[in-house]
Image 1 (spheres, helix red, strand yellow):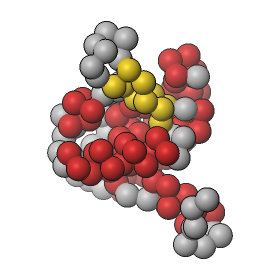
Image 2 (cartoon, rainbow, N blue to C red):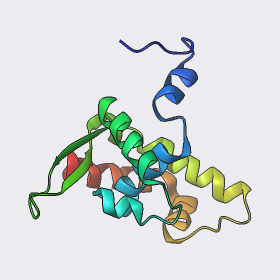
Image 3 (cartoon, rainbow, N blue to C red):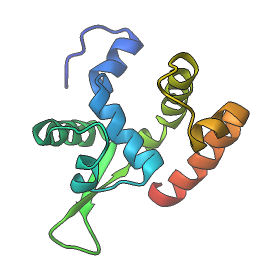
Length: 135
């Protein structure tokens, strides 16, 4: 069993996904439909290969992601969200909303505009989609 820095729930959560890369990988799967290592490498934030491997392994070991062989290409792995990973959706949506609200350099795109209008509906719709796809 892994030792946490403290028993504070925020600290325990940050021990799992407390860096930007883990949350961006979760975002890419959750909201952008990316599933493979090569797709994650193409994200605009330009994650380094060694960091990507490390974060995917951490997210898998924490049971946030699961890894399987691609049905289309047996030499490729794909990642999917577990129930534990899907449960992060409201947090990801809140972080997006907060970032758009307080940072003028982060404009609201299509999804951000929907969040601004009806955040609860966006969360409900995505939860249904993710549960169908991964759950």
